[in-house]
Length: 227
Length: 226
Image (cartoon, rainbow over all chains, first blue to last red):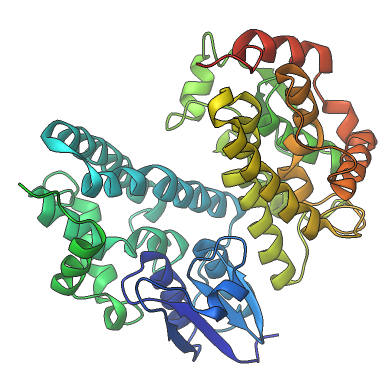
């Protein structure tokens, strides 16, 4: 099962693609990275993910797996004897990790993205406040989950670290755009230190996008109204 | 926590999310204490303590520790009570990934689309119905000739799709809008009958007429604009 060719359809800028790449790196899996061109979708992507037509798609021995968090769990299941465990070992800790990963995607990310699409100062301020509040919850979640260790998952990067950490580049882009820091030493001391550790991890560092490049891409994706 | 420790479930009698958890507990023969929550009226201090983030049901409390979000709870039950019969998720990693994919599709997209199609104002109904049909076509294809989405027995996707198996018919009756019929979706239709016919599933389903009345009262006849 662990043998067989691995391909990943994705893009350098995508948070969700990054999750899959980090997981592959943690398990020392070689893969062919098939980058999509911005503005169009390849035949392979449309064929491999006909339901959503979105990236990332992991193709393992010609079988496609879709949805970033599902791909990460699949990688952990298949290559379970390689590298550290990505999901925690205890069912309760796994449930907590899954709960927070869902919160990050369904609540935290939605508010964060809303800052980029907000119309006017009032709306922007409201979303900033929402992200502040939600980031505070994640600070508490980190303290609970890490139990004094370096990462949400303990000694090594795991599922929840990947779920949140993959957003750090985009978080920085939003902070610069909104002129507001969400991660800082006074408000979120634990998360701030964790973020630095995460970005410097050997499985993450080579693929974390450069902030200026990402900010430029963001301006293309979320153009500001004129005037 | 181990299997012997007390299991409590905070739920809502009519909620498909809440019932997902009860279905799995019944299928696996796991005893539990059930606490009905007045979610739309007065949420109990216990609920607010055990699910402070979302303040919603279902919440499972096992050995004093709480877990929220129905599909997260289902996976927790599956991983904790490994030795009992009736596996909800496949063993094979690829099949497991597929099960999670389809469950997420139902949870994130299908349920809301079906709901909107039933209650949409006249002006938006055509657009919502088209999306609803697309979703059901996808699921009809995925089900294929299997007895259940899980294969021979009820699995993760069947549980996630409980709304389609039981609640959809009720919502259709309450709203007067028909989406899933036997001739348009013969496989899904047959599946829904087999799903609700299962003895363990049947045991936890909320009473049909009570639900119809609640839906009619809360959401109107469906033909009026909001």
